[in-house]
Image (cartoon, rainbow, N blue to C red; front, side, top):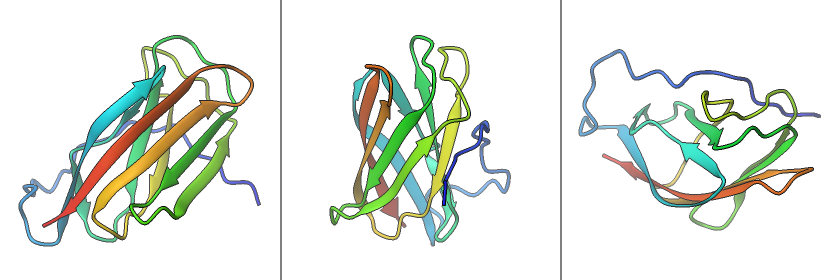
Amino acid sequence: MRAEATSRWIEPLSDGAAPSDPGRRTAEVVTHDGDIDVLCPCNLGPKGAPVQLAFQAYDHADPPFSIRIKAPSGKVVVERVVRDEALTGRTRGISVDFRPDLAGDYSVEVKQVYGELRGKATLRVRFS
């Protein structure tokens, strides 16, 4: 089975809910290192809804990309190779959906499979 991400812009929530609403999740990228940025909306919506992470490179980067997300427990929750989109500095090239079950720090790694561009980030997820 081949899992792929599709290109999408991250849209803000349209229901006007504040991050402090009960049952909602918030997230922030607390650390970042590398040539590829990890982008995440601050307000993630209700618990159980997927989180959309986007990736952006400073320079043009050709696919494929390897994406790995680890939960606070250390378990790998997403491991995908994305082949359908190049990363450029002007657009958010690819996005990946996942559902965080636990509050805490998620490790996000993205690597260009046939190149040298890489990115690492820590995503802190909180439930209210």
